[in-house]
Image (cartoon, rainbow, N blue to C red; front, side, top):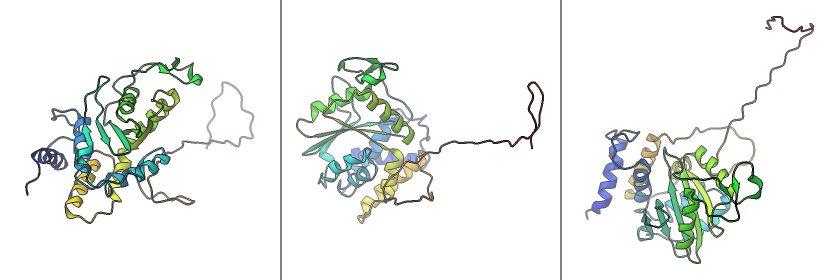
Length: 271
């Protein structure tokens, strides 16, 4: 049976990029890079069982980790009818909305660009020196607006706004947004990095031959985009088989054992 025409177009675009037919910077793409990446990754994942695919990726890589419990409670195999790409809303277009029976997940994807709109609004009392503090004023920050979209779409469901970007960008944006308290109260703000998605893909247990092809293509695509992480740290302590982010701390200590008296305005050499 032939695959749907829409999927074939997405698949050909992804294969073309993997094979170098489309530049890795997207200079010869007509669509925006984030839109293309959103369609390629989440558009392909929807052809896999949610329980075997995206669910496992999110459980391993979502932050805060506590939200993995909400993901674990979603039990779906076929879910392509639950996801909508770039749905219209008066406050803008979120990249994707996934509406499960008891949970709604809004997804905002970034690749090379930053947040599309922002302001100085903060609803946290501790940030008067950095932002303008208001009493529950609605921010025009892109993620704040999208949290309102998720809030209105979710009724009584669990509501998650999921930010997808490079690992460093995820951490910086998450810290900024949480500090300013500009996400709707009934929406959980979370992130998963592209590195985390790649890690999750690499650890999927897939037996279906067709799904193996999808996973292989997605891994190759994200590696080509530059999201392969350094591996093989030697870490003391108990580390579970999940996704972790590690950062280096620069700390240089220089100590001179000088027995001579150092006088001002003179030149000295130390060896």
